[in-house]
Structure formats: structure tokens, C-alpha cells
Image (cartoon, rainbow, N blue to C red):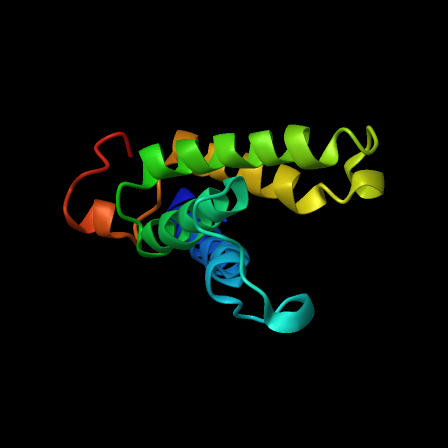
Length: 131
């Protein structure tokens, strides 16, 4: 496969991961999709802050705007989530339930390093000059 196509698959990875990531935030902030009992998390809490980052950071990554700094922040959020919430339970992500946090952390690190790809507002506006 040519490098041309790989850049489009980078964009596709960013878009699909961001859409999935946003659901974690909307679930915390708005109860959608419903989690146990349809409850939401208080906004002025650690999980509320995570919900804001996941919803609005995910939206920025979905459209590919400010992709590198947002991806870096979200990778840090996921690393924090893993070590704060999952790692104390057990060492391995498969055991402690931290697989999504680990995967999102490394996907966002990849987007930070590689950029958003050609299907992004950053590319459209010429903001991603490192491509």
C-alpha cells in the first residue's frame, strides 16, 4: 500500500477513535448512551473534568482541529486514568479493566506524533505543517 493511502487511513483511525472516545464523555456528562441507571457525573469532579475532555477533545479530534495539542492532552488524560483508576487494581490491563485507557493513550500519542492526516480541518487550513 502506498504512503498516500496510509495517510488517509491515519485520518480514518483518528475519526473512528474520536467518535468512540466521545461516547465515554457524553455518557459521563449527559448520561447518553445510558450507563447503569442513566445517571450523570457531577461536572465539578474529577470524572466531570474527564467527561469534558473526552466530549469536547474528542469532538476536536473528530474534525481534526488543533489535533496535535489536543491528542497530547488526551493521551495524558488516558495515562492518568489508567494509573489512577485501573493500575491500583492489578498490573495487567486485561485484569484491571484498563485496556481502553491504554489503547486510547497510544492512539492519541500516535496522532500527536503523526498528525491528523489529510481529512482534517488542520490540513484544510494548512495548520499541520509537519506533514
